[in-house]
Image (cartoon, rainbow, N blue to C red; front, top):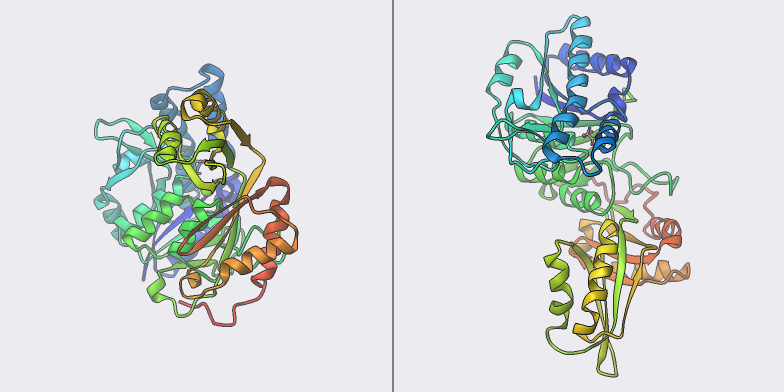
Length: 413
Ligand code: ASP
Ligand code: MG
């Protein structure tokens, strides 16, 4: 008998029919003797609908009130799922985040979980009850309702699994696992049986939308056994997120992530002298704009070009700022480009193997794709390319690293 936390996303509870089928899956796990905690999202589209309503009143809705509003989405699904479970003859009880007492900080719309009072849930489980908890929400010390940021139900699931020391946290979604890359771009993309927690963290931060990044961080910190599965299939093991120590041999590259979330800014012809990077990026940091990639090209005439990327949402703001300080830093011109994409290869195998970068660059060169910027970490290499070549780049890399084939070394945990 195991204690399992199952999280179902919006599409998995998108209709009464779907809610019933979630209840049936839960019933199967109960019949096997497992204790089950279910975390659910709002029904598909509901959170967006609520945000839209709020925006009709306030262009920039008040964060505290927005949280009160958004929390209703999940409250609907927990009640309906508990009813569906009872309808199947199971004992079930639904709880909102504040009822459980999922304590968070007060950062409305992006709150962080601080503690979970799991005693009551444990009592219910002991009494043979399925516990249904609203994802994405919590409560502050002062009793205010908070939400955890878009996709936050994943984090609720993992956090509950950590608090209850569950045997496994299963994330049920509309895909049947984590893929080498998005199958909509590369039809040969392959489902990974396992991926290490670090790789998953990179994939999530680089644009893969399968799991909310905070949930992965949480799983790593508390060593939660996490599995991604399809709620539309009965069979299938999905993808298990493992810890590297548990993994035997890993393939060199596990996956390719990509996104169009960033924009590039270039400061042209700044005097090449100490302090220039600080002078350019200082005001950017002060304006709370996150910088991702940075490249400085050394010039031969005593000046240099300095490029960096920011989130597209902050592009205009960053551009305006640079134009304002252009004279001050003695730059010749400021250029910006929103039509860029970031393509990254991720794999812990990179740590122990040389030559991965050159293989990546060669594959892109063969397609005549120009690399505008490069950044690396121990387990990933990212490049910035022209937006219009993004899909081609992903396909070329998928092929070059033969990600369509099962790795020769078994990647089993
Ligand atoms: N309902 C929230 C959202 O749409 C949280 C979640 O689904 O995880 O972002
Ligand atoms: Mg989600």
